[in-house]
Image 1: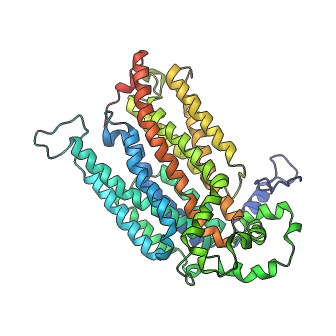
Image 2: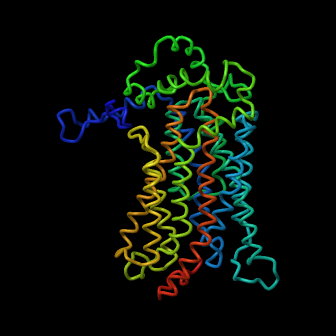
Image 3: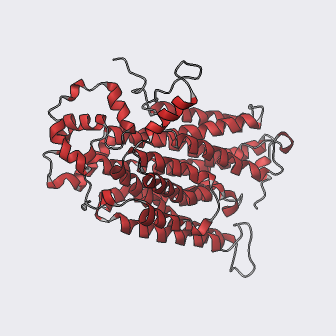
Length: 465
């Protein structure tokens, strides 16, 4: 079947130079994307994404300064993501019984406590021994890691909850969430007061109407339930592909998801209203069905990119006179900035461009890992500026897979399964980061030793600020 431009995931924007291209045409088409959108929803979900991710990003960016050069950055990564991963692994099977308002208060308390513990922890690194044994040294690092664990619990529960919340507010909320999570990598000020923004966004900005009738349990949006009977009689076999794909930008559930539900819902879940629809075993079957189309590509891209970030990037060093930096410790945070810039751009892109094939960018990310690892070993990339481009490209790929994975779920998964599916799939990114953390701890040390043996001891010249 031939696919129309809209079904390929691209908006039908005119090409530059085409007869239909003009600034007015571009503005009109882009404005149509956001027609009927409640600005409060966009603002609230952008802030949710920003605040839920910002401490995670800050911790990874400052990993060098938190633990020093004696401790692999993978240790910080594991403390930052392992609690989040475990939360996402188990919480989807019971968290639906906790009201969203209560969850927000818990996340606020955990993230604030985590930030304060990290910022007030004794200074120093494991190589610095305090004569009185009161501050600095291993104790300081341990306290910082404990604060990171608290914030990680908040981040994991927050991500699966806010993704589930997009079920009630439509596709624009997912686009805003994705953009906010990307923006977290570019905003690093404010620190301990930032979790307050989460409270303001939920209780002061987000319109609460869609949640008023919510019961305890995963459920479909009410208007979909009311219209389902009528739609079942319309014959979904005749729906064109372009209409299905364009549903991504509609304010409510997409045509594709409704058609999918028509053909699969009764087979997998039994009669509507069944008391077992929210049971553990039903949710487990739902999760199993999500693995290959959504969870695996998301897992793969995160394993690759965070192995780069935590295991390879600390060793991507060049002579200072061939770089824009005055010290070797400046390379790592700048790589992090470029990565987060790419993430922000791609996570903000779903209203304008869609990627349906999730495996292609995931495999391209694996290619990035191979390329940069080989360079760390054999030093064949002639300029640090080329590495900058690769790291930026890495961020674009990672952000694209993340936001398009959840966009695909919004479009293709039946409404009755969507809230659970959005939250459950989020375990893949944390799982991928955990795997990358273990790989990165060994890989960074091995690459540094290899470089020193080859006469490139830059990784040993990093001074902690």
